[in-house]
Each structure stands twice: as C-alpha cells, then as structure tokens.
Length: 107
Image (tube, rainbow, N blue to C red; front, top):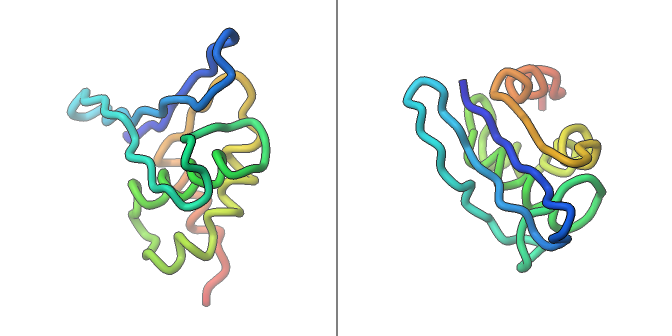
C-alpha cells in the first residue's frame, strides 16, 4: 500500500512537508514538489495554489492508471475531493486514489 501523509503544526502556518510511505518496503520518502502554482510549497485544508501543487504532485508521483494528460486535466478535481477537505492532517491511500481514478469519465 502507498500512503501520502502530512500533518499541520499549530505553531507553524507555513508550507507542510508531505511524505510517501510504501508499506511493503517500509520506505518513507518526502513527496517531490512539482511547482506549477505555489513556489512556497504544499498546503492543504483549503482550495488554493499550495493544495493545487499538492494534488498535482501526488497524482504525478502515483501515476498508476492515469496518464500525464489526465493528471493535468483532473488534478484540480482531486484537490477538491481529497486535499481541501483535510483539516489538521492529510492521509490518502493508493486505494482511495484508485477508486477515484476509476470514477473518472472516459474520454
């Protein structure tokens, strides 16, 4: 299982560090920031540039069952579904992403 996770620190309102955990290998790595909207970094719990980059970066990193064109076409929807509603912590599994991908309309 792949898990994307982050936690907001109450005393630090700035960008958050997001990690990728692979439960099979037990490896945890920082998520690479793909800068498209927010040069300052990742953020969540609202609809904005930091959450948009987070959505784009997660989908690009995961990229199973979805091509680059689909990532660019749908990352804003992913942001609204998964990134914006997260409040103090973010926890998204590959199973949630797979289910979301399977719900995308066929082109």
